[in-house]
Length: 387
Ligand SMILES: *Cc1c(COP(=O)(O)O)cnc(C)c1O
Image (spheres, rainbow, N blue to C red):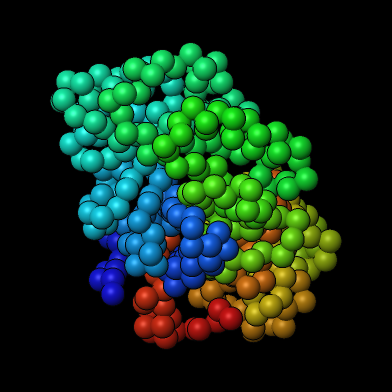
C-alpha cells in the first residue's frame, strides 16, 4: 500500500529507535469516525509534522483510512502536505491566512481559516481581483481568546463582507475539553452556537480529540482530532480508549558498578548509598527527553523499572540497575522509554508536561521504523530484547 521507507540518511547507526505504528493510527481514526457516526465528518489534524511523527507517512495512512479533510497550522505545512496526498482532499490552515500568502493559497487550492477581519478582507479582495468565489473557513472566538473573530467582529460583519466567499465551515476551539466537568465547555458551546448562526450555510466544527468525548452536542458537522489519532488519552480521567502508536527504545552504551558514596552525572546530583550498578543509555534532552525527567523518571527493561540516576545529559542518561539479575542487561540492550510499561502520557507526566509536548519534541536522531516494516526490521535486529 505504501512504499517502503528506506531510512533517513544519518540514522544508519542510531542507537535509539522510534517505532510508529501506522496501523494503530488508522484504527484510531476509524474508532473516532465511528464514535461521531456517519453524519459527521472526521478530519485529521497533522500540524507540526503530524505531531512529530512524520506527516509524509501519517497523512497517506489517514487518507487510506478514509480521511479527506486535513488541518495544519501553517500555509507552508499545507503546501508540503499536498505533495503527499491525492488531490481529492481539503486542506485547512488553522493559523490563518498569512499576509502575502493569498496567491499561494488560491493557486494551490488550499483553504485558509480566516481568524480576523483583516484576513477576511484580504481573502475577499483576492476573490474580487480574480472574479471568482473563494472557499474559506471562518474561526470564531467562543471563549479561548486565542484565535478567531470576536463576537463583536462577527456582529459588525455586513452582508457584503462575505458575498464573494464560500464559507464552507465555521469553527471554534475548546479550551478545557480534557476536563469534562469544567464549566468552560458548556459556556463555549453556547457561545459557539450563537456565533455560528451568522453563517447559516456553513458546516460547523468545534471538537478536537477531547471534545469528541464530551458527547454528541459537541460534534456538530466536522470534528478535528489530532492527539487521539496518535494514541494520547483524550480523556485523562479515564482509561485510554485509543491504541498506542509510539514505542521508543534506547540502547545501553556502557555499564559500570560504582562504590557507595560515588556520584552520578552533572552536578553530582545522585549519590550512591551502596555499591550500585548503572547503565548509560544513548538518549538525552537533545532527543526530547527533557532534563525534568531526571527527577523521578524511569525506563523499563523486561518489565522491570529502572530509575534514572542523576540528571539527563544532552546525549545520554544513566539508570540505576537496582536488583536486576547480573548479566540480564548488557551493552547493546534496548531499553524501553515509551511502550507497554510506560505510556507516552505517563512519561510526560513524570516530567510535568503533556504527551503533546513530548511528541512534538522528539528529536531527529532516532532510527524511525514505521509499522509496515516493523516485522521485517525487528526480526532483522539482533538482541530482540524489547518485549
Ligand atoms: C491542534 C488543534 C486541534 C487538534 O487538537 P487535539 O487536542 O490534538 O485533538 C484541533 N483544532 C485546533 C484549532 C487546533 O489548534
